Length: 85
Image 1 (tube, rainbow, N blue to C red):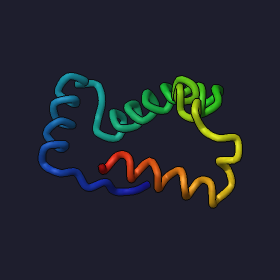
Image 2: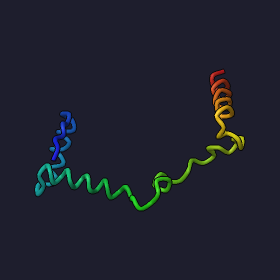
Image 3: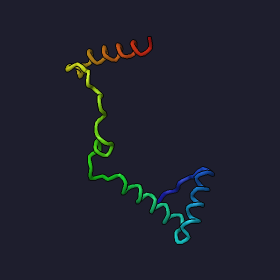
Image 4: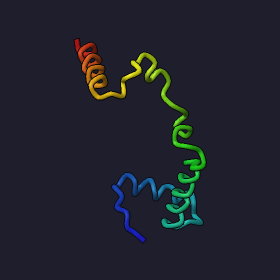
């Protein structure tokens, strides 16, 4: 068991939710909301799929040796210089 401190706005929102669910108390409502949210995570799918795949065009023009630190530092420096000029 644990205690949660809610700001006044969230407290009012909880009261509104409880008003529309008269058969629930605070604990039951919070448990149900957590369960609903947990079920939407779809934990059977890999993280990348849950995030709708890899970013497109992320490294399309990247040099093949970009994983090397010196090359990566130079690429970042060039990008920042180009962006801020």
